[in-house]
Image (tube, rainbow, N blue to C red; front, side, top):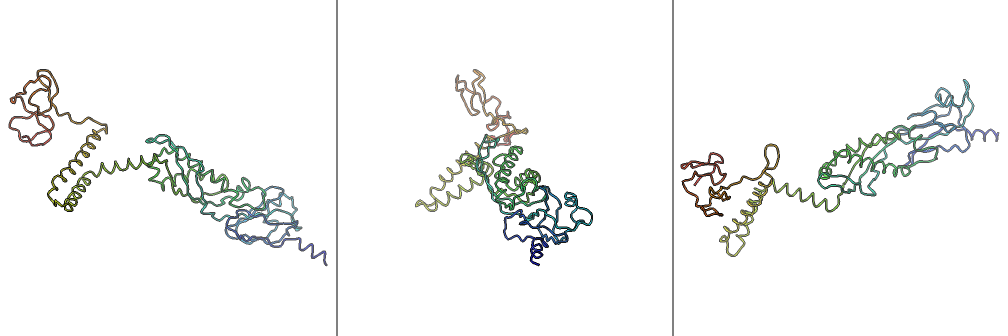
Length: 357
């Protein structure tokens, strides 16, 4: 009776695994010299896959549910062990439970800066960090490529390797996309999707699925950040110079009201503020003036030439700056604004519309 009880204790009648951790990816069921009875029950819970391995080879795979272990349910194992029809004896095999749930909030970051070539700033170094999530998508491929025959496999065993894959994939995505540093910093969400699609295939080859990738931040060297800030500020000034002039005028009124002289000095303050604004506005306008083909062109040349020596003079000059020739008032007049020829009685220039005095 004692021998019978001993032999019975060596036979497994029910095989299952309850995951008590949040990081276990693969768990090898402890056999401890025991055999599995034909007709035993195998319980596979949700987000689990059970895999039988014999003689170092992957055999049958079971998904969620309660399974009765008979010859018909173990076709690959039966073939590997050459079981005869109606086989009912106990057998030996390794059983692995693979956790197929998502492993979320995995941290990643660049140990060394990524070198990227930018069209505006040249070669620069950037750093980045974020989180990612993954799960086992193909248990057989995962066991074959990464796990082997260890008794326990956790996310700690693989996350370092996956991080290096992510950083390499993001570097390749930056190089292939040729996105500028300014666009990259402003469009992280779009770049997330692009990088995820680029890296996903590498995870698939390991039997994994990259379910989520978040790039929380991309940081640039201090000099590049200052250059980006300057470029942004110039864009704001270019588009909002009128607002700037109005602001300076209102500011001058406020300052004048606070001064002991009251509003007496308001005219000079307004004149100074508006003059500065107009100077900056005109400099931006002339420096960025473009033709229809978006090519830069020179400002309109408002001048006239001396008929005696050919020297260049301003439109309002009465005497030549080189030879002293007096410009005759009977000479055909020109518009003081654009230089176009006009008649004596013209009140408004037909070219630029300015009033002619």
